[in-house]
Image (cartoon, rainbow, N blue to C red; front, side, top):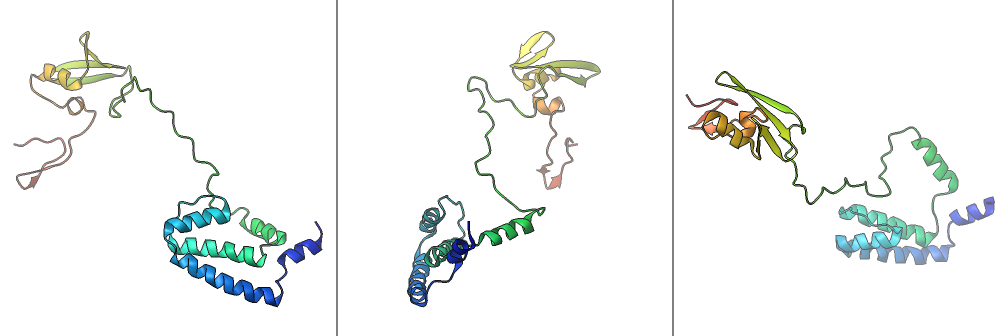
Length: 194
């Protein structure tokens, strides 16, 4: 590429063209200011060839008008200016967005029910002492094993161990009781009314 083509690309247009383009640019700016955000997004797409999620009206107007100025005057950044910008940005924390959307994790198997995140991994043995007896529960893929029997709920096992209704996750220490208000006073986590 020779210097003549670069300088002609960045040269100012003749005076008659400047007056005509100034008037049309003024009209273009007024038209942009009158547009709703959705139409500005469409105009941005037409100008830059890519969609934007931006909903900031002033930013969209400025970007679309800047592009209209570039097209009307034919003046864009020179190759030297672009190289200088790249050199200045080198080593700096320049924010960029990926060209494509990040890959989504694989969809879960529709035949397999979602697993509760509070549960430990399959194969883990949960130990809980109650009334001096240690109870062992093995976590299975489709439930729990306690004393050689299969259960689908920790609450059922807790009821069998204690004889009263319990939240299984709470009884086996897989979650903690949240503080709550009772009678105008605050209860401690895991505490009971006296």
